Length: 52
Length: 534
Image (spheres, each protein chain N blue to C red):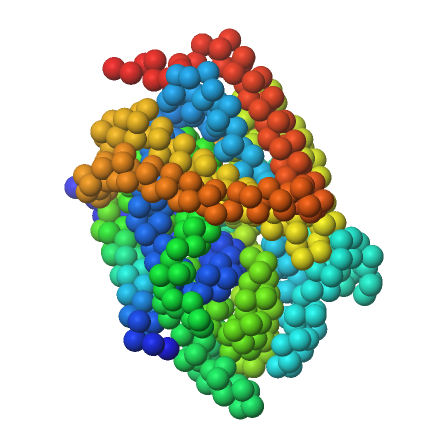
Protein backbone atom coordinates (compact mmCIF):
# COMPACT_ATOMS: atom_id res chain seq x y z
CA UNK A 1 0.00 0.00 0.00
CA UNK A 2 1.63 3.25 -1.14
CA UNK A 3 1.06 6.69 0.45
CA UNK A 4 -1.07 7.52 -2.61
CA UNK A 5 -3.19 4.44 -1.92
CA UNK A 6 -3.69 5.41 1.74
CA UNK A 7 -4.64 8.93 0.66
CA UNK A 8 -7.20 7.74 -1.92
CA UNK A 9 -8.67 5.22 0.52
CA UNK A 10 -8.98 7.65 3.45
CA UNK A 11 -10.43 10.42 1.26
CA UNK A 12 -12.89 8.08 -0.49
CA UNK A 13 -14.14 6.19 2.57
CA UNK A 14 -14.05 9.33 4.74
CA UNK A 15 -16.01 11.36 2.23
CA UNK A 16 -18.82 8.85 1.65
CA UNK A 17 -19.13 8.18 5.40
CA UNK A 18 -19.29 11.90 6.24
CA UNK A 19 -21.83 12.59 3.49
CA UNK A 20 -24.06 9.73 4.63
CA UNK A 21 -23.76 10.87 8.27
CA UNK A 22 -24.70 14.44 7.29
CA UNK A 23 -27.76 13.16 5.38
CA UNK A 24 -28.89 11.08 8.38
CA UNK A 25 -28.66 14.11 10.69
CA UNK A 26 -30.50 16.25 8.12
CA UNK A 27 -33.33 13.71 7.78
CA UNK A 28 -33.63 13.31 11.56
CA UNK A 29 -34.02 17.08 11.86
CA UNK A 30 -36.61 17.29 9.10
CA UNK A 31 -40.12 17.99 10.36
CA UNK A 32 -42.72 15.57 8.95
CA UNK A 33 -39.98 13.53 7.30
CA UNK A 34 -42.20 10.49 6.80
CA UNK A 35 -44.76 12.52 4.84
CA UNK A 36 -42.33 14.69 2.96
CA UNK A 37 -39.33 12.49 2.04
CA UNK A 38 -39.66 9.61 -0.41
CA UNK A 39 -37.83 6.73 -2.03
CA UNK A 40 -38.81 4.22 -4.68
CA UNK A 41 -39.53 1.92 -1.74
CA UNK A 42 -42.49 3.88 -0.44
CA UNK A 43 -43.93 5.25 -3.67
CA UNK A 44 -46.80 2.97 -4.63
CA UNK A 45 -48.23 3.32 -8.13
CA UNK A 46 -51.99 3.99 -7.92
CA UNK A 47 -52.85 0.97 -10.09
CA UNK A 48 -51.04 -1.30 -7.62
CA UNK A 49 -53.13 0.17 -4.78
CA UNK A 50 -56.44 -0.46 -6.52
CA UNK A 51 -55.49 -3.94 -7.70
CA UNK A 52 -57.93 -6.40 -6.13
CA UNK B 1 -52.96 22.44 23.13
CA UNK B 2 -52.59 19.68 20.60
CA UNK B 3 -49.06 18.66 19.68
CA UNK B 4 -47.68 19.94 16.39
CA UNK B 5 -47.21 17.46 13.56
CA UNK B 6 -43.46 17.82 14.14
CA UNK B 7 -43.58 16.48 17.67
CA UNK B 8 -46.08 13.77 16.84
CA UNK B 9 -43.67 12.12 14.40
CA UNK B 10 -41.33 9.87 16.38
CA UNK B 11 -37.63 9.26 15.85
CA UNK B 12 -38.46 5.68 14.89
CA UNK B 13 -40.44 6.85 11.87
CA UNK B 14 -37.67 9.20 10.79
CA UNK B 15 -35.07 6.45 11.07
CA UNK B 16 -37.51 4.34 9.05
CA UNK B 17 -37.37 7.00 6.33
CA UNK B 18 -33.56 6.83 6.23
CA UNK B 19 -33.68 3.03 6.04
CA UNK B 20 -36.28 3.09 3.28
CA UNK B 21 -34.41 5.67 1.21
CA UNK B 22 -31.06 3.92 1.66
CA UNK B 23 -32.48 0.42 1.30
CA UNK B 24 -34.04 1.25 -2.05
CA UNK B 25 -30.64 2.33 -3.36
CA UNK B 26 -28.65 -0.69 -2.18
CA UNK B 27 -28.40 -3.64 -4.52
CA UNK B 28 -26.10 -6.04 -6.35
CA UNK B 29 -24.25 -3.11 -7.94
CA UNK B 30 -22.69 -2.18 -4.59
CA UNK B 31 -21.33 -5.51 -3.41
CA UNK B 32 -20.82 -7.39 -6.68
CA UNK B 33 -20.62 -5.10 -9.74
CA UNK B 34 -18.52 -2.28 -8.24
CA UNK B 35 -15.70 -4.54 -6.98
CA UNK B 36 -15.62 -6.30 -10.37
CA UNK B 37 -15.23 -3.00 -12.21
CA UNK B 38 -12.70 -1.59 -9.73
CA UNK B 39 -10.58 -4.74 -10.03
CA UNK B 40 -10.82 -4.69 -13.82
CA UNK B 41 -9.45 -1.13 -13.96
CA UNK B 42 -6.92 -1.34 -11.10
CA UNK B 43 -8.72 0.11 -8.11
CA UNK B 44 -7.22 3.46 -7.17
CA UNK B 45 -7.05 4.71 -10.75
CA UNK B 46 -10.70 3.75 -11.22
CA UNK B 47 -11.73 5.80 -8.17
CA UNK B 48 -10.74 9.07 -9.88
CA UNK B 49 -13.20 8.86 -12.81
CA UNK B 50 -15.64 7.24 -10.41
CA UNK B 51 -15.83 10.23 -8.04
CA UNK B 52 -15.67 12.72 -10.92
CA UNK B 53 -18.67 10.91 -12.42
CA UNK B 54 -20.48 10.97 -9.06
CA UNK B 55 -20.20 14.76 -8.70
CA UNK B 56 -20.59 15.83 -12.31
CA UNK B 57 -23.04 13.18 -13.50
CA UNK B 58 -24.57 10.84 -10.91
CA UNK B 59 -25.92 13.27 -8.36
CA UNK B 60 -26.91 16.07 -10.78
CA UNK B 61 -28.66 13.61 -13.09
CA UNK B 62 -30.43 11.91 -10.17
CA UNK B 63 -31.82 15.32 -9.16
CA UNK B 64 -32.72 16.03 -12.79
CA UNK B 65 -34.56 12.70 -13.16
CA UNK B 66 -36.56 13.18 -9.97
CA UNK B 67 -37.53 16.68 -11.13
CA UNK B 68 -38.48 15.62 -14.68
CA UNK B 69 -40.55 12.72 -13.36
CA UNK B 70 -42.46 14.76 -10.78
CA UNK B 71 -43.03 17.57 -13.30
CA UNK B 72 -44.48 15.22 -15.94
CA UNK B 73 -46.38 13.12 -13.40
CA UNK B 74 -48.35 16.20 -12.37
CA UNK B 75 -49.38 16.50 -16.03
CA UNK B 76 -50.77 12.96 -16.26
CA UNK B 77 -47.79 10.91 -17.49
CA UNK B 78 -46.08 8.00 -15.71
CA UNK B 79 -44.03 6.11 -18.31
CA UNK B 80 -40.77 7.57 -19.64
CA UNK B 81 -42.08 8.00 -23.22
CA UNK B 82 -44.91 10.06 -21.72
CA UNK B 83 -42.57 11.96 -19.40
CA UNK B 84 -40.39 12.94 -22.36
CA UNK B 85 -43.48 13.97 -24.34
CA UNK B 86 -44.60 16.22 -21.47
CA UNK B 87 -41.30 18.07 -21.60
CA UNK B 88 -40.14 17.97 -25.21
CA UNK B 89 -42.55 18.95 -27.99
CA UNK B 90 -40.74 16.98 -30.70
CA UNK B 91 -42.60 14.01 -32.19
CA UNK B 92 -39.43 11.99 -31.52
CA UNK B 93 -39.61 12.59 -27.76
CA UNK B 94 -41.68 9.54 -26.71
CA UNK B 95 -39.66 7.26 -28.99
CA UNK B 96 -36.41 8.39 -27.36
CA UNK B 97 -38.15 7.71 -24.05
CA UNK B 98 -38.66 4.09 -25.12
CA UNK B 99 -35.01 3.60 -24.11
CA UNK B 100 -36.22 4.07 -20.53
CA UNK B 101 -38.39 0.97 -20.94
CA UNK B 102 -35.78 -1.10 -22.76
CA UNK B 103 -33.05 -0.51 -20.17
CA UNK B 104 -34.77 -1.74 -16.99
CA UNK B 105 -36.43 -4.66 -18.81
CA UNK B 106 -33.18 -5.94 -20.36
CA UNK B 107 -31.25 -5.40 -17.13
CA UNK B 108 -33.97 -7.38 -15.34
CA UNK B 109 -33.32 -10.29 -17.73
CA UNK B 110 -29.81 -10.86 -16.38
CA UNK B 111 -30.25 -9.27 -12.95
CA UNK B 112 -32.73 -12.01 -12.02
CA UNK B 113 -30.05 -14.62 -12.81
CA UNK B 114 -27.61 -12.99 -10.39
CA UNK B 115 -30.43 -12.76 -7.87
CA UNK B 116 -30.81 -16.54 -8.27
CA UNK B 117 -27.08 -17.08 -7.69
CA UNK B 118 -27.40 -15.09 -4.40
CA UNK B 119 -30.31 -17.27 -3.31
CA UNK B 120 -28.43 -20.44 -4.26
CA UNK B 121 -25.27 -19.30 -2.46
CA UNK B 122 -27.34 -18.50 0.66
CA UNK B 123 -28.82 -22.00 0.58
CA UNK B 124 -25.52 -23.72 -0.18
CA UNK B 125 -23.68 -21.75 2.52
CA UNK B 126 -26.38 -22.73 5.03
CA UNK B 127 -26.11 -26.42 4.14
CA UNK B 128 -22.31 -26.35 4.18
CA UNK B 129 -21.92 -27.47 0.57
CA UNK B 130 -19.88 -24.31 -0.10
CA UNK B 131 -17.28 -25.09 2.58
CA UNK B 132 -14.56 -26.02 0.13
CA UNK B 133 -11.48 -25.10 2.20
CA UNK B 134 -8.98 -22.43 1.24
CA UNK B 135 -8.18 -23.77 -2.21
CA UNK B 136 -9.22 -21.06 -4.64
CA UNK B 137 -9.54 -23.46 -7.57
CA UNK B 138 -12.38 -25.29 -5.79
CA UNK B 139 -14.50 -22.11 -5.54
CA UNK B 140 -13.72 -21.01 -9.09
CA UNK B 141 -14.59 -24.49 -10.37
CA UNK B 142 -17.80 -24.61 -8.33
CA UNK B 143 -19.02 -21.24 -9.58
CA UNK B 144 -17.93 -21.99 -13.13
CA UNK B 145 -19.86 -25.28 -13.14
CA UNK B 146 -22.86 -23.77 -11.39
CA UNK B 147 -23.46 -21.04 -13.99
CA UNK B 148 -22.05 -23.01 -16.97
CA UNK B 149 -19.04 -20.84 -17.79
CA UNK B 150 -17.37 -23.67 -19.73
CA UNK B 151 -19.85 -24.02 -22.58
CA UNK B 152 -23.15 -22.77 -23.97
CA UNK B 153 -26.12 -24.76 -22.71
CA UNK B 154 -24.04 -26.40 -19.93
CA UNK B 155 -26.48 -25.27 -17.22
CA UNK B 156 -29.28 -27.15 -18.96
CA UNK B 157 -27.41 -30.47 -19.06
CA UNK B 158 -27.70 -30.76 -15.24
CA UNK B 159 -24.39 -32.65 -14.69
CA UNK B 160 -25.01 -32.77 -10.91
CA UNK B 161 -28.79 -33.15 -11.13
CA UNK B 162 -31.59 -30.61 -11.56
CA UNK B 163 -31.74 -29.58 -7.89
CA UNK B 164 -28.02 -28.80 -7.76
CA UNK B 165 -28.19 -26.57 -10.83
CA UNK B 166 -28.97 -22.85 -11.00
CA UNK B 167 -32.33 -23.48 -12.69
CA UNK B 168 -34.57 -24.16 -9.65
CA UNK B 169 -33.27 -21.00 -7.94
CA UNK B 170 -33.89 -19.02 -11.10
CA UNK B 171 -37.45 -20.33 -11.36
CA UNK B 172 -38.07 -19.39 -7.72
CA UNK B 173 -36.70 -15.87 -8.26
CA UNK B 174 -38.70 -15.34 -11.44
CA UNK B 175 -41.84 -16.56 -9.76
CA UNK B 176 -41.29 -14.49 -6.61
CA UNK B 177 -40.78 -11.29 -8.63
CA UNK B 178 -43.84 -11.73 -10.76
CA UNK B 179 -46.14 -13.00 -8.02
CA UNK B 180 -45.23 -9.99 -5.87
CA UNK B 181 -45.81 -7.52 -8.67
CA UNK B 182 -48.86 -9.39 -10.04
CA UNK B 183 -50.59 -9.43 -6.68
CA UNK B 184 -49.61 -5.81 -5.97
CA UNK B 185 -47.89 -6.61 -2.66
CA UNK B 186 -44.58 -4.96 -3.48
CA UNK B 187 -45.14 -2.41 -0.71
CA UNK B 188 -45.27 -5.16 1.91
CA UNK B 189 -41.98 -6.58 0.68
CA UNK B 190 -40.44 -3.10 0.66
CA UNK B 191 -41.56 -2.57 4.26
CA UNK B 192 -39.89 -5.84 5.22
CA UNK B 193 -36.71 -4.88 3.39
CA UNK B 194 -36.68 -1.55 5.20
CA UNK B 195 -35.61 -3.54 8.25
CA UNK B 196 -33.59 -6.15 6.36
CA UNK B 197 -31.21 -3.55 4.90
CA UNK B 198 -29.60 -2.53 8.22
CA UNK B 199 -29.04 -6.24 8.80
CA UNK B 200 -27.24 -6.43 5.44
CA UNK B 201 -25.02 -3.48 6.43
CA UNK B 202 -24.35 -5.12 9.83
CA UNK B 203 -23.37 -8.37 8.07
CA UNK B 204 -21.12 -6.44 5.70
CA UNK B 205 -19.43 -4.71 8.66
CA UNK B 206 -18.75 -8.10 10.30
CA UNK B 207 -17.29 -9.41 7.04
CA UNK B 208 -15.22 -6.23 6.71
CA UNK B 209 -13.69 -6.74 10.15
CA UNK B 210 -12.81 -10.31 9.18
CA UNK B 211 -11.20 -9.24 5.89
CA UNK B 212 -9.11 -6.57 7.63
CA UNK B 213 -7.89 -9.14 10.17
CA UNK B 214 -7.08 -11.89 7.65
CA UNK B 215 -3.34 -11.13 7.81
CA UNK B 216 -1.51 -13.56 5.52
CA UNK B 217 -3.77 -16.63 5.31
CA UNK B 218 -1.30 -18.60 3.19
CA UNK B 219 2.27 -18.19 4.62
CA UNK B 220 3.62 -19.82 1.45
CA UNK B 221 2.52 -16.70 -0.48
CA UNK B 222 3.52 -13.83 1.85
CA UNK B 223 2.83 -11.19 -0.84
CA UNK B 224 -0.90 -11.95 -0.70
CA UNK B 225 -1.79 -10.20 2.55
CA UNK B 226 -4.24 -7.57 3.75
CA UNK B 227 -1.99 -4.60 3.04
CA UNK B 228 -1.15 -5.63 -0.51
CA UNK B 229 -4.85 -6.43 -1.01
CA UNK B 230 -5.80 -2.94 0.09
CA UNK B 231 -3.00 -1.61 -2.10
CA UNK B 232 -4.41 -3.46 -5.12
CA UNK B 233 -7.77 -1.79 -4.52
CA UNK B 234 -6.60 1.71 -3.59
CA UNK B 235 -3.10 2.38 -4.98
CA UNK B 236 -3.36 4.89 -7.82
CA UNK B 237 -1.48 2.52 -10.13
CA UNK B 238 -0.48 -1.11 -10.14
CA UNK B 239 2.19 -3.17 -11.87
CA UNK B 240 3.81 -1.61 -14.90
CA UNK B 241 1.13 0.95 -15.76
CA UNK B 242 1.43 4.56 -14.66
CA UNK B 243 -1.53 6.52 -13.33
CA UNK B 244 -1.59 8.66 -16.49
CA UNK B 245 -1.64 5.58 -18.74
CA UNK B 246 -4.58 4.22 -16.75
CA UNK B 247 -6.43 7.53 -16.89
CA UNK B 248 -5.96 7.66 -20.67
CA UNK B 249 -8.24 4.64 -21.05
CA UNK B 250 -11.61 5.98 -22.27
CA UNK B 251 -13.23 2.63 -21.46
CA UNK B 252 -12.45 3.19 -17.78
CA UNK B 253 -14.14 6.63 -17.78
CA UNK B 254 -17.18 5.22 -19.55
CA UNK B 255 -17.40 2.24 -17.21
CA UNK B 256 -16.88 4.43 -14.10
CA UNK B 257 -19.77 6.62 -15.22
CA UNK B 258 -21.74 3.45 -16.07
CA UNK B 259 -21.11 2.07 -12.58
CA UNK B 260 -22.34 5.31 -10.96
CA UNK B 261 -25.45 5.21 -13.14
CA UNK B 262 -26.03 1.49 -12.50
CA UNK B 263 -25.75 1.62 -8.74
CA UNK B 264 -27.72 4.88 -8.35
CA UNK B 265 -30.31 3.61 -10.90
CA UNK B 266 -29.68 6.84 -12.82
CA UNK B 267 -30.37 6.77 -16.57
CA UNK B 268 -32.59 3.67 -16.24
CA UNK B 269 -35.89 5.52 -16.52
CA UNK B 270 -36.93 4.05 -13.15
CA UNK B 271 -36.45 7.17 -11.00
CA UNK B 272 -38.46 9.39 -13.34
CA UNK B 273 -41.24 6.78 -13.48
CA UNK B 274 -41.52 6.55 -9.68
CA UNK B 275 -41.14 10.33 -9.22
CA UNK B 276 -44.12 10.82 -11.52
CA UNK B 277 -46.35 9.47 -8.71
CA UNK B 278 -45.21 12.18 -6.23
CA UNK B 279 -47.18 15.22 -5.11
CA UNK B 280 -45.98 18.63 -6.37
CA UNK B 281 -44.58 19.75 -3.01
CA UNK B 282 -42.91 16.48 -1.93
CA UNK B 283 -39.17 16.78 -1.27
CA UNK B 284 -36.94 15.31 -3.94
CA UNK B 285 -33.65 17.11 -3.21
CA UNK B 286 -32.82 15.61 0.21
CA UNK B 287 -34.44 12.27 -0.70
CA UNK B 288 -32.19 11.86 -3.75
CA UNK B 289 -29.10 13.01 -1.86
CA UNK B 290 -29.74 10.59 1.03
CA UNK B 291 -30.28 7.68 -1.37
CA UNK B 292 -27.04 8.59 -3.18
CA UNK B 293 -25.06 8.93 0.07
CA UNK B 294 -26.36 5.63 1.47
CA UNK B 295 -25.59 3.89 -1.79
CA UNK B 296 -22.06 5.32 -1.95
CA UNK B 297 -21.38 4.35 1.66
CA UNK B 298 -22.34 0.72 0.94
CA UNK B 299 -20.44 0.69 -2.34
CA UNK B 300 -17.17 2.42 -1.48
CA UNK B 301 -16.80 1.95 2.28
CA UNK B 302 -18.14 -1.63 2.37
CA UNK B 303 -17.99 -3.09 -1.16
CA UNK B 304 -14.60 -1.48 -1.87
CA UNK B 305 -13.00 -2.64 1.36
CA UNK B 306 -14.34 -6.19 1.31
CA UNK B 307 -14.43 -7.92 -2.05
CA UNK B 308 -11.36 -6.67 -3.93
CA UNK B 309 -8.82 -6.88 -1.05
CA UNK B 310 -10.19 -10.32 -0.12
CA UNK B 311 -10.10 -11.45 -3.73
CA UNK B 312 -6.48 -10.34 -3.98
CA UNK B 313 -5.53 -12.17 -0.78
CA UNK B 314 -7.08 -15.44 -2.00
CA UNK B 315 -6.72 -15.26 -5.78
CA UNK B 316 -3.69 -13.01 -6.32
CA UNK B 317 -3.47 -10.16 -8.86
CA UNK B 318 -3.74 -12.42 -11.92
CA UNK B 319 -6.66 -14.37 -10.42
CA UNK B 320 -8.54 -11.16 -9.62
CA UNK B 321 -8.10 -9.88 -13.16
CA UNK B 322 -9.31 -13.19 -14.62
CA UNK B 323 -12.36 -13.30 -12.35
CA UNK B 324 -13.12 -9.63 -12.93
CA UNK B 325 -13.25 -10.31 -16.67
CA UNK B 326 -16.93 -10.98 -16.12
CA UNK B 327 -18.44 -8.23 -14.00
CA UNK B 328 -20.38 -10.09 -11.32
CA UNK B 329 -18.18 -13.17 -10.85
CA UNK B 330 -15.60 -11.81 -8.41
CA UNK B 331 -17.86 -11.73 -5.34
CA UNK B 332 -19.17 -15.27 -5.90
CA UNK B 333 -15.66 -16.68 -6.24
CA UNK B 334 -14.22 -14.80 -3.27
CA UNK B 335 -16.82 -14.22 -0.55
CA UNK B 336 -17.41 -17.94 0.25
CA UNK B 337 -13.67 -18.26 1.00
CA UNK B 338 -13.92 -15.44 3.57
CA UNK B 339 -16.96 -17.04 5.20
CA UNK B 340 -15.15 -20.37 5.30
CA UNK B 341 -12.30 -18.98 7.37
CA UNK B 342 -14.21 -16.92 9.92
CA UNK B 343 -15.97 -17.85 13.16
CA UNK B 344 -19.72 -18.35 12.58
CA UNK B 345 -18.87 -18.01 8.89
CA UNK B 346 -21.71 -20.24 7.79
CA UNK B 347 -24.27 -18.14 9.65
CA UNK B 348 -22.85 -14.80 8.50
CA UNK B 349 -22.42 -16.06 4.93
CA UNK B 350 -25.98 -17.36 4.76
CA UNK B 351 -27.35 -14.10 6.15
CA UNK B 352 -25.17 -12.03 3.81
CA UNK B 353 -26.23 -13.81 0.61
CA UNK B 354 -29.86 -13.97 1.71
CA UNK B 355 -29.96 -10.25 2.49
CA UNK B 356 -28.21 -9.52 -0.79
CA UNK B 357 -30.94 -11.54 -2.47
CA UNK B 358 -33.59 -9.41 -0.73
CA UNK B 359 -31.82 -6.19 -1.75
CA UNK B 360 -31.77 -7.50 -5.31
CA UNK B 361 -35.49 -8.34 -5.19
CA UNK B 362 -36.40 -4.74 -4.29
CA UNK B 363 -34.27 -3.51 -7.21
CA UNK B 364 -35.65 -6.01 -9.72
CA UNK B 365 -39.24 -5.21 -8.73
CA UNK B 366 -38.62 -1.54 -9.48
CA UNK B 367 -37.18 -2.49 -12.89
CA UNK B 368 -40.53 -3.90 -13.98
CA UNK B 369 -42.60 -0.81 -13.11
CA UNK B 370 -41.64 1.44 -16.10
CA UNK B 371 -42.70 -1.22 -18.64
CA UNK B 372 -45.92 -1.90 -16.73
CA UNK B 373 -46.69 1.84 -16.80
CA UNK B 374 -46.18 1.90 -20.60
CA UNK B 375 -48.28 -1.23 -21.22
CA UNK B 376 -51.08 0.30 -19.17
CA UNK B 377 -50.79 3.71 -20.83
CA UNK B 378 -50.24 2.41 -24.35
CA UNK B 379 -52.54 -0.56 -24.61
CA UNK B 380 -54.94 0.36 -21.82
CA UNK B 381 -54.22 -3.01 -20.23
CA UNK B 382 -54.89 -3.71 -16.55
CA UNK B 383 -51.97 -4.27 -14.22
CA UNK B 384 -52.28 -8.04 -14.25
CA UNK B 385 -52.43 -8.34 -18.05
CA UNK B 386 -49.42 -6.01 -18.31
CA UNK B 387 -47.49 -8.07 -15.78
CA UNK B 388 -48.30 -11.31 -17.65
CA UNK B 389 -47.13 -9.92 -21.00
CA UNK B 390 -43.97 -8.53 -19.42
CA UNK B 391 -43.36 -11.89 -17.76
CA UNK B 392 -43.30 -13.57 -21.16
CA UNK B 393 -40.91 -11.00 -22.69
CA UNK B 394 -38.45 -11.15 -19.79
CA UNK B 395 -38.59 -14.97 -19.65
CA UNK B 396 -37.37 -15.15 -23.27
CA UNK B 397 -34.47 -12.79 -22.48
CA UNK B 398 -33.51 -14.66 -19.32
CA UNK B 399 -33.56 -17.95 -21.25
CA UNK B 400 -31.07 -16.39 -23.67
CA UNK B 401 -28.77 -15.40 -20.78
CA UNK B 402 -29.01 -18.88 -19.27
CA UNK B 403 -28.36 -20.72 -22.52
CA UNK B 404 -25.42 -18.60 -23.78
CA UNK B 405 -23.51 -19.09 -20.54
CA UNK B 406 -20.03 -19.70 -21.97
CA UNK B 407 -17.85 -17.02 -20.34
CA UNK B 408 -21.16 -15.35 -19.40
CA UNK B 409 -21.14 -13.92 -22.94
CA UNK B 410 -24.86 -13.03 -23.23
CA UNK B 411 -24.94 -11.57 -19.71
CA UNK B 412 -21.84 -9.46 -20.32
CA UNK B 413 -23.08 -8.31 -23.72
CA UNK B 414 -26.39 -7.15 -22.20
CA UNK B 415 -24.57 -5.58 -19.24
CA UNK B 416 -22.21 -3.70 -21.55
CA UNK B 417 -24.58 -2.53 -24.31
CA UNK B 418 -27.58 -1.88 -22.08
CA UNK B 419 -26.13 -1.69 -18.54
CA UNK B 420 -23.40 0.74 -19.62
CA UNK B 421 -23.88 2.21 -23.13
CA UNK B 422 -27.70 2.62 -23.25
CA UNK B 423 -27.77 3.96 -19.69
CA UNK B 424 -25.09 6.43 -20.72
CA UNK B 425 -27.12 7.57 -23.73
CA UNK B 426 -30.35 7.91 -21.73
CA UNK B 427 -28.55 9.82 -18.97
CA UNK B 428 -27.28 12.22 -21.65
CA UNK B 429 -30.84 12.71 -22.92
CA UNK B 430 -32.02 13.43 -19.36
CA UNK B 431 -29.31 16.07 -18.94
CA UNK B 432 -30.18 17.77 -22.22
CA UNK B 433 -33.92 17.71 -21.50
CA UNK B 434 -33.41 19.15 -18.03
CA UNK B 435 -30.72 21.71 -18.87
CA UNK B 436 -31.84 22.86 -22.31
CA UNK B 437 -35.44 21.84 -23.05
CA UNK B 438 -37.13 22.31 -19.68
CA UNK B 439 -34.44 24.92 -18.96
CA UNK B 440 -31.88 24.74 -16.15
CA UNK B 441 -33.43 27.67 -14.23
CA UNK B 442 -36.95 26.25 -14.52
CA UNK B 443 -35.65 22.79 -13.65
CA UNK B 444 -33.82 24.20 -10.63
CA UNK B 445 -37.03 25.86 -9.44
CA UNK B 446 -38.85 22.52 -9.87
CA UNK B 447 -36.14 20.74 -7.87
CA UNK B 448 -36.27 23.33 -5.08
CA UNK B 449 -40.08 23.12 -4.77
CA UNK B 450 -40.73 21.49 -1.39
CA UNK B 451 -37.00 20.80 -0.94
CA UNK B 452 -35.63 20.24 2.55
CA UNK B 453 -32.15 21.40 1.52
CA UNK B 454 -30.95 24.22 -0.66
CA UNK B 455 -29.06 22.95 -3.69
CA UNK B 456 -26.12 25.26 -4.54
CA UNK B 457 -26.76 27.27 -7.71
CA UNK B 458 -23.58 25.88 -9.25
CA UNK B 459 -25.81 22.87 -10.01
CA UNK B 460 -27.40 24.94 -12.81
CA UNK B 461 -24.01 25.50 -14.45
CA UNK B 462 -23.00 21.84 -14.01
CA UNK B 463 -26.20 20.34 -15.42
CA UNK B 464 -26.37 22.81 -18.31
CA UNK B 465 -22.75 22.87 -19.47
CA UNK B 466 -20.42 20.53 -17.59
CA UNK B 467 -22.46 17.31 -17.54
CA UNK B 468 -23.39 17.28 -21.25
CA UNK B 469 -19.88 18.20 -22.37
CA UNK B 470 -18.37 15.62 -20.05
CA UNK B 471 -20.74 12.91 -21.29
CA UNK B 472 -20.11 13.84 -24.91
CA UNK B 473 -16.31 13.98 -24.54
CA UNK B 474 -16.06 10.53 -22.96
CA UNK B 475 -18.46 9.03 -25.47
CA UNK B 476 -16.58 10.40 -28.48
CA UNK B 477 -13.24 9.28 -27.03
CA UNK B 478 -14.66 5.85 -26.26
CA UNK B 479 -16.05 5.49 -29.80
CA UNK B 480 -12.69 6.51 -31.22
CA UNK B 481 -10.82 3.94 -29.13
CA UNK B 482 -13.28 1.06 -29.27
CA UNK B 483 -15.87 1.34 -32.05
CA UNK B 484 -13.86 -0.79 -34.47
CA UNK B 485 -13.19 -3.58 -31.97
CA UNK B 486 -16.82 -3.76 -30.84
CA UNK B 487 -18.03 -3.83 -34.44
CA UNK B 488 -15.56 -6.65 -35.15
CA UNK B 489 -16.72 -8.54 -32.05
CA UNK B 490 -20.31 -8.30 -33.24
CA UNK B 491 -19.51 -9.68 -36.67
CA UNK B 492 -17.17 -12.42 -35.43
CA UNK B 493 -18.90 -13.66 -32.27
CA UNK B 494 -22.33 -15.18 -33.01
CA UNK B 495 -23.40 -15.03 -29.34
CA UNK B 496 -22.68 -11.31 -29.13
CA UNK B 497 -24.47 -10.74 -32.46
CA UNK B 498 -27.49 -12.80 -31.33
CA UNK B 499 -27.70 -10.96 -28.02
CA UNK B 500 -27.44 -7.53 -29.64
CA UNK B 501 -30.05 -8.63 -32.20
CA UNK B 502 -32.37 -9.66 -29.39
CA UNK B 503 -31.90 -6.31 -27.64
CA UNK B 504 -32.83 -4.53 -30.89
CA UNK B 505 -35.92 -6.73 -31.24
CA UNK B 506 -37.07 -5.80 -27.72
CA UNK B 507 -36.42 -2.13 -28.54
CA UNK B 508 -38.58 -2.46 -31.66
CA UNK B 509 -41.40 -3.92 -29.58
CA UNK B 510 -41.26 -1.01 -27.13
CA UNK B 511 -41.14 1.50 -30.00
CA UNK B 512 -44.36 -0.03 -31.38
CA UNK B 513 -45.95 0.15 -27.94
CA UNK B 514 -44.84 3.77 -27.67
CA UNK B 515 -46.49 4.55 -31.02
CA UNK B 516 -49.70 3.06 -29.68
CA UNK B 517 -49.36 5.13 -26.50
CA UNK B 518 -48.91 8.32 -28.52
CA UNK B 519 -52.18 7.65 -30.37
CA UNK B 520 -53.92 7.10 -27.03
CA UNK B 521 -52.47 10.27 -25.46
CA UNK B 522 -53.53 12.28 -28.51
CA UNK B 523 -57.10 10.94 -28.18
CA UNK B 524 -57.09 11.82 -24.46
CA UNK B 525 -55.77 15.33 -25.23
CA UNK B 526 -52.89 15.11 -22.72
CA UNK B 527 -50.53 18.15 -22.88
CA UNK B 528 -47.37 17.91 -24.95
CA UNK B 529 -44.04 19.73 -24.62
CA UNK B 530 -44.96 22.03 -21.73
CA UNK B 531 -48.10 23.24 -23.52
CA UNK B 532 -49.45 24.30 -20.13
CA UNK B 533 -46.33 26.40 -19.45
CA UNK B 534 -47.44 29.52 -17.54
